[in-house]
Image (cartoon, rainbow, N blue to C red; front, top):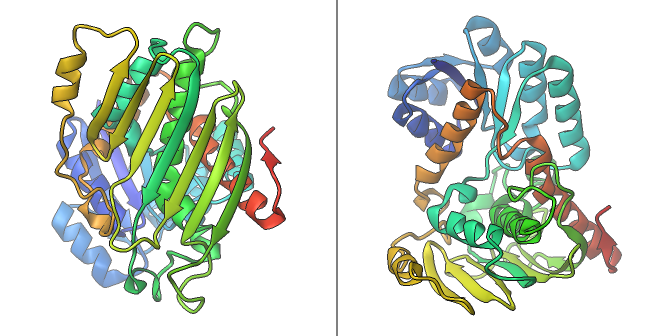
Length: 365
């Protein structure tokens, strides 16, 4: 089966999609759309595909099976609706959209059209994160005590100046909605797996309610001027999960020179901690024979992880993510990051923003 794929929005992340598609057997990039002709033609030449000035004409002019949406975050809804009108499946970059209301509009259109709508959270396809998920699903942590994410990054003024990043309209938020959302999705996914161990619920989170029940947060703009950024560059939040687990989130693009992101989950049964791609802690009350091998496999990282340069991120996890969607489509099987699952991180961030504005805890119903 050949999956004919078009990309809406030819920005930096579109190159990761294009490179990934080129590596996947049975995937073919047929076209890309953007308003800037020079960029569009350069992209078309580099990836041997067609260029269109807008998504609608691209979908009408090409035989497309899947639309990969790589437009700015607050402009995901419109190409998704265009694809749904034409019966084309959608794979959308994170976040699905910048509010849950806009996501729900996408979901309603996809359901009515009978198409697939899936999200991209490439950290779920990072082998070391999957190792934690497997341990959580097996109940190795016992009842979780803590599930936290720390993203202490830096972006210089040039990253925001004159760009859609950092705007309320198209970014929907700052260090949380744009950069830290991967860590937020990862910890809610890991917490879901731990809560599902031995329970009547899905370890991959699909069909389960959001595992986060309540948040309390502060956000601020500390390192960038109002003239170049409208949203937060620094955020801290405390989480209470539905099963009683507690957590913390640090999301920042204000911490020069930027350092590696950290995920941590722990409970009575053990602790695991990832520093970027390095497994810095892997200790369990009930050790297993393969634990030393796991520590050795993930014992170091040479990735900058986007701490200061967003283009230093390798596209291997994107490739795995896209391939999983295409495999699910080909086999007519459920996709791990369907719209209901990809929505959860945005729901958490939305609650964090509301808490910071109101100065009080906010529940996620």
